[in-house]
Image (tube, rainbow, N blue to C red; front, side, top):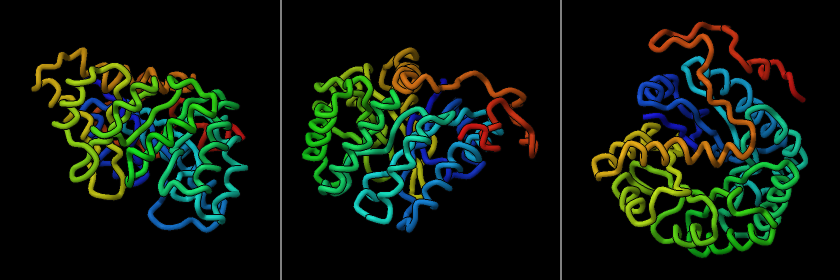
Length: 292
């Protein structure tokens, strides 16, 4: 089973997680920029975080045989904080960096006018940078938020096949599929979706444009929920090819639209061997600021 986890916050995970993920078939991840759990108070805290995603975290993942990519944006929750809005001027230059495969997470948290403005602005940035977009649907009023999200995306002129609408469930998946966008599902221990519900949706809607992620972060979450979903699919009668489509080919097809996915094996990585401190790997020049 080969896996690209298309939404996981590895900044919050340990090296044990990387080892377990690799052993379970994870060969690549996408880490969306997100809220850190407490308010940021300056643009500098954003740029330091973005630099870490594109430098240190990429290097750390490679030490465990996993290719790391990121999406960059001002997230919806912080769009309401005037101290954070200045980072919008910095986002476009980060969208040009190695390893950036989409603009995201963008969308709605509380569906405020401020979120409307920031969402529209970053959709335009995606058009300008010719990148796909990862959209966060709100945790509250999810159906209303999804309708509003799809309306704003339509108004932006972005092609729906370049949009992944995430954190879906049974209430809004049909809306997203009817709009022609990609449907994303976060599999969580207590909230969002679980493996059995996900399998039921795959049985109803098929495997085309369906993407499964763990969205693992600092909270109670599980970076192996992708492989567990794959096993649940097999137990329910799906084929190995179906599992490969959902866990590998679909996220590769979506993020591959960026032209920035790197999926070849990490040079010098030996499974089961401890990472060697300071060892160079292909692409590690980003740690030295090779691209401005």
